[in-house]
Length: 227
Image 1 (cartoon, rainbow, N blue to C red):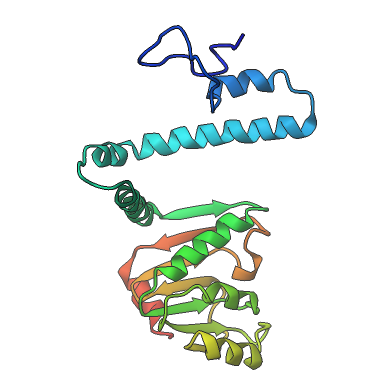
Image 2: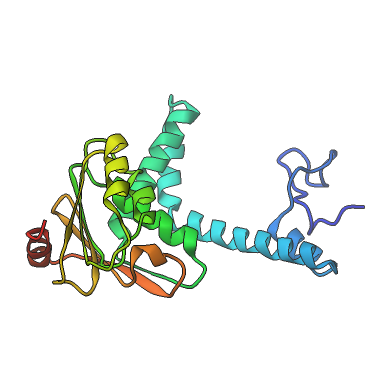
């Protein structure tokens, strides 16, 4: 016997249940299964799966119109449809981003957002951070080819000329300058987009902080002049 709650039992051809083994569990099935589990690892996995269902529902709800429009397209191969969906979602993500708050432990999430910002640059990246170290170079290696990088930092930063020279041999062009005019951290992309970082980039995911996009063009121009 298989519970109709645990697995999807309805098909177009037969409303009395499937005649072969299912390949997936429904969200309700996972919820029922979690009530029977006693092993600690199994319980954690069950919770993770439920979280995935919740996030998937949110994702489909927020982007339902995109998928509906793609499904109406005829004579388009599946790979092309995937490309259209991903391009649309990426464009939507870039337009909607205004502020993100990261908590202790969200290392990958905060790192991914910084990488997305770096990859968005077509010509120039300005980074203002008083406490950077060579970890910033690993992030900047993800930049697009021929994008110029300028880093303004304090005398206290732990980035050496040797690190910079090695980086420039493979990912030119990176320039640095020392200054004591800034307290906060900023990233400027192509002299057009300005981001304020609540913590030094070397502390990504280690402390609670926010990354905010500043829309005021006047501030973008003033900060960009320092490069």
